[in-house]
Length: 196
Image 1: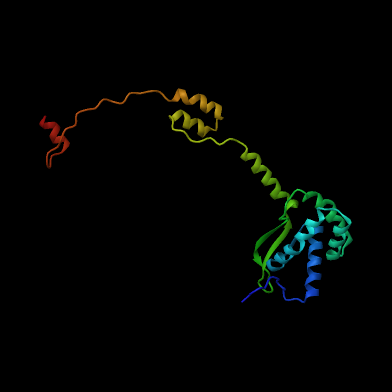
Image 2: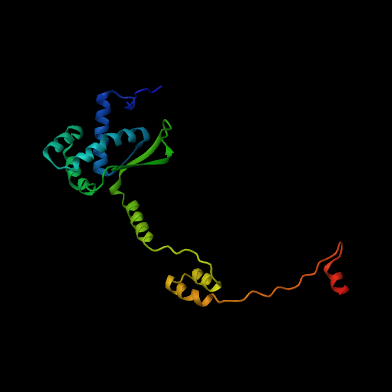
């Protein structure tokens, strides 16, 4: 049972765990992404996200509290410089964990990539492309003649289809009702026609 077990100790002593998370946080800030196991990535997320939140407020006190955790001047400069500038408008959720399909060879541990969300250029470009694509209006399929369906298949604009729609729909009267013959038991239509 895991009653009240809030911290994953990762099989390390407290000092070893803090040193490891501090080093991993420094690597994440400097390189913007780190490949590690899923358990370590989840522990690192809990460790580094409060530091990123403190970095948005550039005061002496916040710099001292972050330095107490990181103990690295180069990562402090990077954190309070370019990283804080990019994450300034984000209300939280600064990291993303992407699970990898491959496992580690030695112990078959699940591997993943933990990265800073605002620094993944490929995902940001695809997100911007989908936002630009989604701004176009969505046309619904309307019942119409073959002219409108052909216009949709050829990829014409909405204005051309709208102009073609009144021309394609013409009013036609329904055919008049015709008399139907009733067939008797076992009689086919040909026999009924010959009989008349």
